[in-house]
Amino acid sequence: MDDSELTALFVQQSERAIALAQQKYGSLCRRLAERILGNSEDAEECLNDMWLHAWRAIPENPPDNLPGFLSTLTRRIALNRLKLNNRLMRGGGQVPAVLEELSACIPAPDSVEAEIDRRQFLESLTRFLDTLPHDARVIFVRRYWYLNTTAEIAEAYQMSDGKVRVTLTRTRRKLKAFLEKEEFL
Amino acid sequence: MKNTDMLEWLTDLDGRFLTEAEQPAIRVTHRRRRLVPALIAAAAAVVCMTAGVSASLSRNTDLLTKWFGKDAESSLSALPEPKVYENGQVRVTVETELDDGINHMLLVSIETPDGEPYQAPLYDWQDVEGNPIRLQQSIMTYGYDAVHHGFSSIGQITEFGGFDFRRSPEDHSETPDGTIPEYRLGSYMAIRIPYAQFDEGDFSFKLMFRNMEGTEIDIDDPDDNPFAGISIPVHKGQNTECAVYRAENGNECRLSCFELTVLDRNAANIAELHWDTSGGIVLIKTDGSRKELDWRDTHGAIGEYLEPGIYSEVPLGTFTDTDSVQAVELGGVLYEKQ
Image 1 (cartoon, one colour):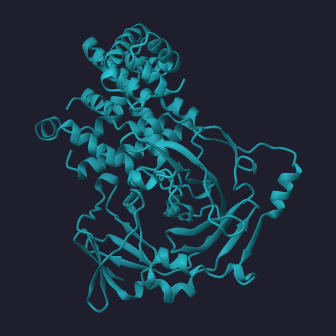
Image 2 (tube, rainbow over the protein chains, first blue to last red):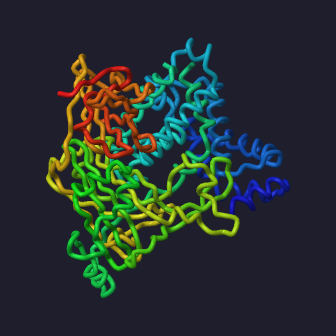
Image 3 (cartoon, rainbow over the protein chains, first blue to last red):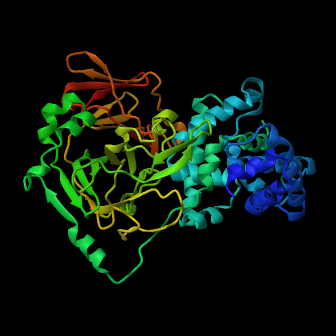
């Protein structure tokens, strides 16, 4: 079943929608939730919330990119749960490592919170990602959106773990320079 | 902003980046196999000819002027001659190959063996608004580890279409009658090797289409790769002038007929590099006139970080005669010819 048919089932509020979506994208969302939350129990609860949200939201606004929508929903719910659990720096998962890596690229609290809203930041980030070579962009998104480990990325792209790390390091440097130029830093 | 905010903000990243990252990686193999007759025939059909051998190898003046601009017409005869590589499926012509001692580029055209426009494979994609569109696959280079220099691996400026989001969606869309716009069928591209360091001497690279299905590709199998059997050599050796311009702070920029490179000797890392093109890049001619530098869209590669102290590669949009350029004004800083 392709994504448009699956989305149509959600719109029709068919009971098969969630079961079929779980078959197709359940493992993708589960891995993402586990990477963020660091344990399978929390990830399971996160997924339950996610399917409920998807069930309610899709009929009103059917997504063009179903896996993107489901994984975005999963990511948002998992991060909210992480904050609620207050496990940020002591929990498992990839979040502490990712935050450590991104720390140099994160705008200063005062300057950003006062003057720059999230949308402007996303627009800048989009422009930045558009400037990257394909492989560097995919590696960046895999690491900082999907929270894949560098080893997972290396295996997926048949490159060394070192090359992934070097690519990420250079991309972060570029991002820092870019954000400075855009006056976020 | 707290660290977690950054991750939360990233959640709303444009979906096309997520779709792109979800694509399985291309797996390139070099299976050792017994040569089958078709492969032998394809390998035997691979030829390399230089201009002068055949009338069909005359300099492609139309393409060269299209790429380098009309001002280049008087300089075309000085450009390296074309070389052709064929395998029975596709003809690849290196229209010219330039090396300014820092950067290297090959202007390449791709046709059928009959000289007709080559139709690249199509794949289904979405435009920025999520509408389904069909795109031609872009061409990848493969096998350039010899000069892979950090982040600045071999690069392409392609007008072949393909994996490029910056064009407007309608450019990529099928026309109402379902055909692909004609302009996309003519294919040529510049393959650039910025800051090329031929530490290991000359090398070769291969071509392949970016496979959006993520299936395994045997790059040497004609069934998998229409470019199978074609290996394009890159020759070390500066063949065009590169003028040096220096600023009062000791920084340098180097200008050749096809590229501008900036060397910031004082910068220890990318954050310290001074690269401000907001005021444009101005060439100051020997007669005192000023001309805005016409540079080519590298899809973001302008200002690419090469290594500490070197921040460069601005491929020029038009052929530039360095003899006529007395100084370069870059981000308000004057670089004078040495």
